[in-house]
Amino acid sequence: MKKSLILLLATLTFKSQAQTLFKPVDINYTTRTVIIPEGFKYSILYSEFDTVVTNTGIKAPAKGSQDMIVYIPIDSSSEHGYLYVNQEEHIPNKLLGDGGGGTVFEVRKKRGEWVVIGDKHAVDFSNVGETFRNCGGTITPRGTILTTEEEFPQSNAEIYTRFGITDTSDYNGKKKYLNYGWMVEVDPRTHKAIQKIKEFGRYPHEDAQCMPDGKTIYLTSDNVPAIVFKYICKEPGVYTGGQLYAYQQSADAQSGSWIALPMQEDSLMNIIDVAVRRHATMLNSTEWIEAIGDKLYISESGTNHFNFGREIAMGGRPARHLDQLCRATGDNYEDHYGRIVELDLKTNKMRPYLNGGISKKDSRFCFSSPDAMTSATIRGKKYLIISEDTDGDKNGSASAEVSARHEVYNEVYFLDMSIPDPTLDDLQRFMVGPEGCETSGNMFTPDGRNYFVSIQHPTTSNPAPFNKTSVIAITGF
Image (cartoon, rainbow, N blue to C red; front, side, top):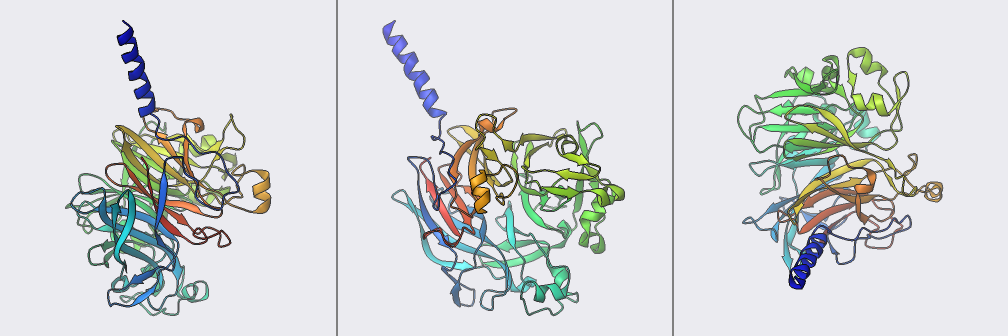
């Protein structure tokens, strides 16, 4: 009897420990470095101004604002692979090419710590006319990278006057500014762009999610209004000849459908307005997208003040949760915190899964402006890992003292996906980033033991190494 009781207690203790990944870190509105839980450690793999090598052998200082990270295993290994990293830039650069960028390099885990093997290779985007602010994206089933262009100029004059890029010559027979704002496919093995994918549409691309069938891709737009798009290929991995759709929520918000969009180039050039005129559902600045089973999770970062009057007059329909949670007066909305939205692919039902805001248990704790996301299975349990990108001035996003200093602190949270209707208090704070940074680029190795994250644009007055953008690897899971 006594032995059985001991075994039972031991089993319960083991289960309790197995469900605890880490002791959440405390709120911190003063840190100038990365704060992670006890038992974890980080190493810096790639920083702004590191030396990168072009395909022609030129060595140059790396661009900054490292964003999306993709881990590409070598021989299916979770301890040896390549990292592809986006550069969310829009600056002139004679050596690496104007605008945005990307970098590919080999990494290996040695004695528990990640190190870089060999050179860091700058991706060559010259054959597609360069890019603008490479933000999110994904790896395709055939091993290429989809990288987004999150911003684009509105005229050739703006290319020069606002961004300082001197080459405003026509590209492929069109005005140069029309060459920006697309999704771009990259071959990470050759460090070279393959194509700009016009059939995904031109708009502020944020992220993409390739589905296991190799034919279906979901796309988000960092725009107000934001539209959720779906592209279906005729053949797996072939991004021409397919069909683009926009999501439309049902009147009762219990289901939805996908509206086929015209595929002519003049429509694709202005596809958000085209979708709005066809009564697509409008959200508020959608960011990253993550598929877990038959559901999509989309971060909707929110905007303090916005107006849908123009788009409603055109036929656009605000998502039901915006009308319920954010409507102020008329077509004016207030959305200080944002949320995670769930889209059930079986029923096409869209609902707010986790709303941002201030915790009722601790008024210092505010979850705001969710942005980069990934998921991982760790110890048999699925987690959604969520990064913040608050600007520091939103209502309640920081203490009054921090807001008065005009500082910014962003965090990374883990959310147990077995919780059907989570609240703010179910978030587990894994990391607090150094002042000024956006936590971004989230990616795990396939075994769930190693986490890569970008510490993007921290305040330059922080002590080194977090006075510039860096990509770090965190171990200890």
